[in-house]
Length: 337
Image (cartoon, rainbow, N blue to C red; front, top):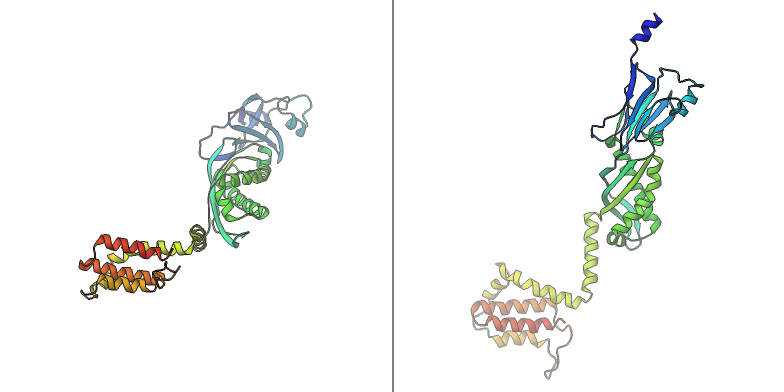
């Protein structure tokens, strides 16, 4: 009977894993009731590693190559099974294969804005996203902390853990640096390198090596971004008088296109209103007695716009030429400088 049981057993001569390219990181060789024979062959392909686990205890690890399984090639397993000099064949052991290929173009990002303390804006909420790549380097650590006794462990199952780890590290890094959002946005490469340096030990704890980490974008929520844009615009403007002049000059073409703009107001003017009368009214308050130079800021932006609207109406009536209007417009705009 014992002989028949021995004959019925299935023995494993070759242990190998042909990856199917579906993002599998760890795969357990299907043992079922099969046992491994003395002298069986273990094939570990490039970008793979193999790990023997005996009754829950991690034993021998193998890198790429072809191995004949003996007491010499399985020293830890030999010790765990109390083999003396002879390899007891057949034997049972869990065998796991791991993919060490670089996992490219992995996405990370903040699913919701994170709250940080900014040295310029105070408390702000920020978003960020980018890509990273990694590969498995330590099958023992990965088995003990991540994949465990699963038959298959995929890259997608690990994605959420790694992404959240990166976001948490970024939040800590920003708090430690005490910088500003503007500085970070302007130096994304440097910030990415700092993040990568901080995250590498965390990845190593899982048996992984973080190869690259890129910050592609940092931004504020829409309402805060509008405030930042206004601040940037004010800094660029600097001189508010020049900004007002710029606004007035740009508003005239738009107003002329509208029914209720410059043209409509011009229709209401009497045909007998002369050029000198309109200009006199416009310039009276802007000039000092005796023909002195205009007083700075003597005319408000509203007054200038109103005067230009009237002058444009004269152009529409044919009383004033376009060249005269352009000359007078330039003169009026100078009153704002």
